[in-house]
Length: 347
Image (tube, rainbow, N blue to C red; front, top):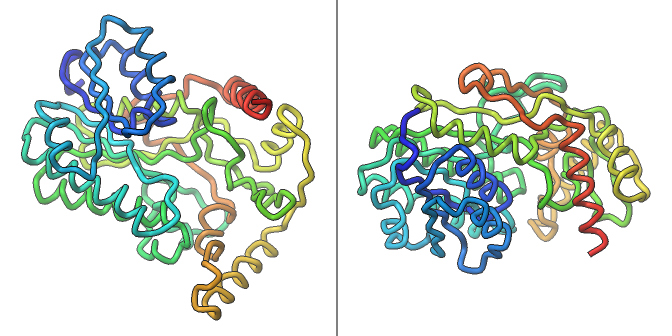
């Protein structure tokens, strides 16, 4: 382990779905000196509940803004380890996503360089950074796959920002010899995350369009994901490496949708075969170009490749190098997720 249990650890995005579980995982492992960065507008009920179960720990909750370099300098002072989860997840526009994922990361890295105390910077990225258009249907997606070089064409601001964020982290790691590690979760699910992943289908057209079919969904239960992220910050000898986070038992889209309907709520859905969904994305893309962007290129062939082409997924590297294994099996993870969805639907 590269740090001691009382070394200062900063977790950005601590009020988020995954960030809160990372805080909990660190406390359960016995780390006692945490700085939890949250947005000024964050609801801290879940985080407060976690902290109340560990009264002996020295935890500072910081309401700050990563767009402020002064805030970044203040929060990284004497910090040994950073888990960087804060990102512009819900932004629709490219400038907003760039500001809240890339500019903020640059500010944090600048502060880290100036502080000079960091032993590991863990950047939490995503599967969306991969150039899946270079893969064939059924090919395995692992850490050796190339990253997207045309992320601006995906029609998804979040994907564009995560690619640029990774590029920035790699540049700083090389230029300043910063010890950085990147983790890329697949589809993280569990209590606290509402809705069905778009890899299964889309529900915004009056009826649910089931697009995944027999595709495997790269699921990671939030507890399993948080454990993997924590390990990436503690293990010696993994600077400069990237790790995919995905569970062992991956259902098909069809299996997952059936389970959801059986355990949460019944609703009508129509299966759209892969050739048809590809054609629809192609037509949407062409019309968007013809209309000069009046219809945003929300659905296009690159996005189809990411979500609905049908690749397979590997967690072999993270298990071999970090010694990680999913603690929560799929059946238990799915039932807790479905129970949360039922309760959320009644509220």
